[in-house]
Image (tube, rainbow over all chains, first blue to last red; front, side, top):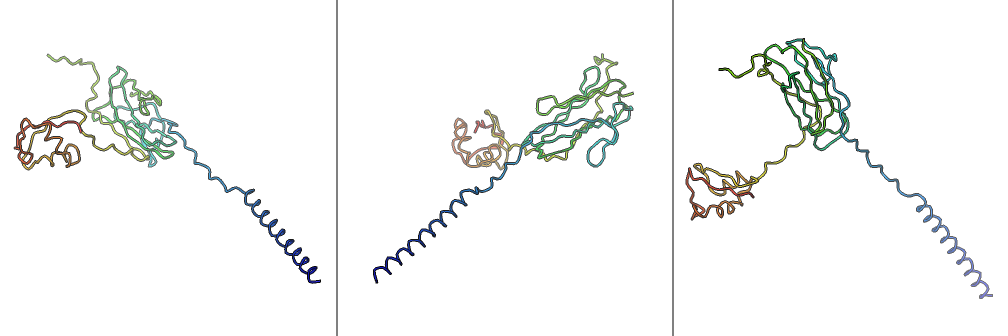
Length: 153
Length: 89
């Protein structure tokens, strides 16, 4: 009799142990099934010039108030550049030239943009501008990023 | 005789500039002289002072001393007006 009770107890114990193991295995499986979320690496947008505009005045955000390719002899000439993307170091250089090939102005800015940005270059003359055709070429490092022509009349 | 072309447009009074909303790129630190250069000793200079000026590191005074053993016998004794060779670091 005692022996039968022991066997029954053992059987119950084995059942409990088996159920516990199954439950544990189930939990472990669940953990495996749900991998930790992988954080997406931020997309790095390389620096690029989006637009170039000439004008006589800039607003507070460094955009030309009114785009123009015609200027008067007393005007200050602004080149507004919209860019996007990032770079640890990029040099923007504006080279202004007169129709005879003379360099009127040449300026550069070393920038470390981290996103959309506005950059401006300008030239002004204490004397009246010689009338004629001019152009300004923008370089990003050594690569031409665009060229604008304008007339002083 | 004026050699300038009187018809050539004059841009000598032009001023130019610029600015940006983007942060400026960090300027690289001052580099050590790439090749040998000359340095004229001023009053108050010592080899370590000169090394600090040209290399940014006073401990490099020995480089200057070793490049100038023809004219410096005692590293603590240099004279204003003396022209020292400054080797590349």
